[in-house]
Length: 368
Image 1 (spheres, one colour):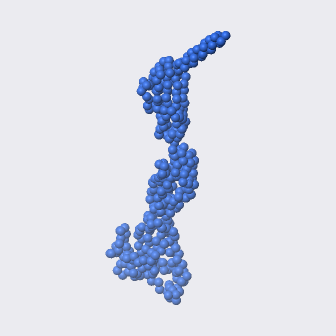
Image 2 (tube, rainbow, N blue to C red):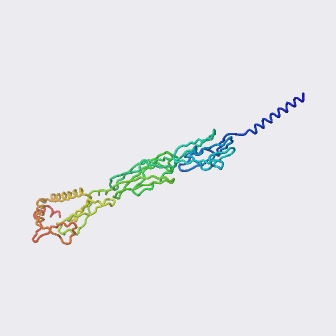
Image 3 (cartoon, rainbow, N blue to C red):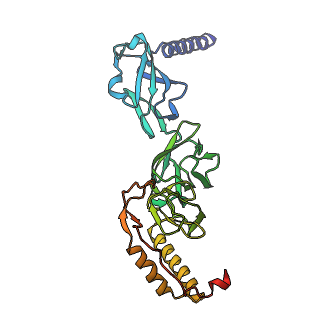
C-alpha cells in the first residue's frame, strides 16, 4: 500500500515539473510598444519643438515592417531610430528605439495613432500661439483740421494668442497724449482691452506718421495717422502802432502790402494782409483774412464818419473837398518808397492846393 502511494506522488511530481518547464520555456510572440516617458507632448508653441521616445520589441515569429514613413506624418516626425530598425523593419527578438518630434506650424490639437500589428500607441500635441497683439483699427484718418484742435479716438487691443502677454509701451510723439487706458500691465490670452489717444497738432503741415507700440514680449502694433493741418484763424482784429517809412508826414497817402501773419502757434496765415493808414495816431490794422479785412475797413469808415457827425462837421462836404484835391494829382512814382508791386503814386503837381475845410470844423475847435 505504501509503495503504491509513493509511486503516485512521484508520477504527480514529475508531471508538475514537466508542465512548469513547458510553461517556462514557452516563447513570447508578437510586438510590444512601450513609451519612454509620455507620448503626450502637451502645449507646444508654434514654431518650437518637443521630443518623445518609444521602444518597439519584436518577439516573432517573423520580421515586422514598422511603416514609419507612412504613419508618422506632419506635425510629427521621426528624428532618430536605433540601428536595428534603420531600414524601417525589425527582426525577431530585436528592439528598436524611435525618437518622435512634435513641431506644430499652426494653432490647434493634433493626434497621431501609431500601430505595429495589433499594438498601438497614441501621440497627442497642442500647438499654441504666443501672445499676438492686434488692433481693431490701424488707420487714424483725421483729415483736414485747424491747428490746435484736439482729436480723440478709441482703440481696441486684442491678444489673439494662447499665452498672456505684456501690454505694449505707449511711446507717443509730443502732439499725442494717452487718454484712458484699460489694458493694465498684462493682457490675458484671447482677451481684449481699450485705450484712447488725444491728438493736438499745432504745426500746420501734412501728417503721415506711424505710431508703433512695442511689448517687451516681442509683439507690436502700429497705427498710421494721416491729417492735413492748416493755420488757425487769428482771433478778432489785431492792432498795433507803427510809422511806415513810405507814409508822408501830411497824412495824405496810404500803402497796402502783403505781410506774413501768424496764428497763435506761429503758423503763417497765407491770406493775411497788412493795411497801413497814416492818421494822427499812425495806426496800422492787422487782420487774419480777407473777410476780417473788409470788416475792419468798414469799422474805420463808421468810426471816422460817426466822429465827424458827432462833432457837427458836414462829412459829405469834407469828402468832396478831399476827393477834388486828390483828383487834381497826377500819377507818378515817389522816389525812395518801397514799391514791390510797381504801383503808381499820386504826385502833387505844381500849383496843387490842399483841400479847404474852412467853416466846416463843427465843434472841433472847442474840443481840441
